[in-house]
Image (cartoon, rainbow, N blue to C red; front, side):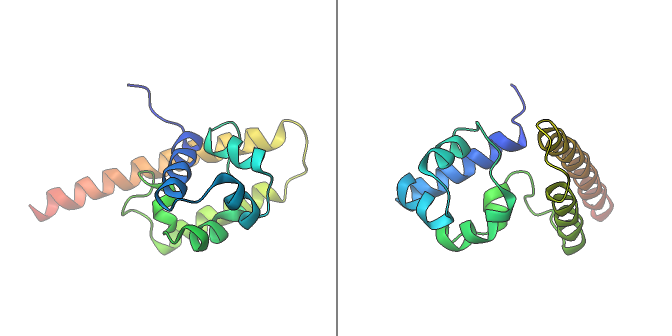
Length: 132
């Protein structure tokens, strides 16, 4: 089975959550201040969902950040990890905007997040084995 990308996971979660809340794409687009076609591209995995919109989405959908990023961050996010992630996202958004720079940096962030996730899962396995 093919491993889903971060983009596919987030887009699938957003699609599922807005459907569960019976929010139409047009209404959702208006509330997060983007075009309806942008929302369509986000939920179909064409474009990355803009991370700066996460706080607005959490309020609109009445969900948690973990709901948006699950299973990426299921029960492994701790405050320092979140701060580190937000710092990396901030660095990406402050970079000069060349045609290729943002996608490349987002790809690097995806790789970084996958590595951190593997580390956290290994730590969790080690903790469970130690407590057995």
